Image 1: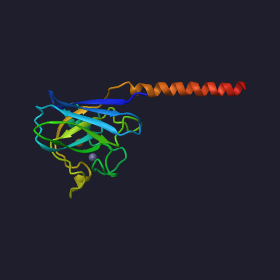
Image 2: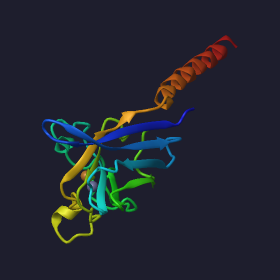
Image 3: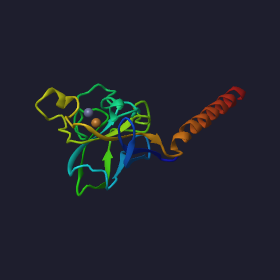
Image 4: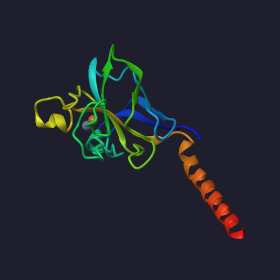
Length: 188
Ligand SMILES: [Cu+2]
Ligand SMILES: [Zn+2]
């Protein structure tokens, strides 16, 4: 069994061009393992120092702008919250703190997954210009978006390891195993 890995290349997107801003690597050993999320931002990314909202958004569509990715990935129809909260969108990963225009660190999350029906494959990563209030603000939008402001950069999450292929292969092996057992029972 190989681990599952995925990658999103972050770009500052507008109608006529997109500019490289960094990348995000996702890595998960098993379906119930924590997700390792390595985030590396380009030094020239022009993101101001301080907290910036960081989420998985619903669609893997960044055509023309990061807005096409639509809202936070929220298949369980919950309110917006922090990464550590039980009440959160699946896609809520809180903030990253930019210092000296740089970021290069690993974040751990126990909710997002590269396995199963709520897999984030094919969806988008969005990095915001402002801080996510983690659902603690006094206005209604705090529970919906976290008021993280404009979308600075985004990228579509793609498959980046053999681990995705092996599950179907082991499924077939399992079926053949069951078949042989059944035949053996029939013969005996
Ligand atoms: Cu977002
Ligand atoms: Zn959210």
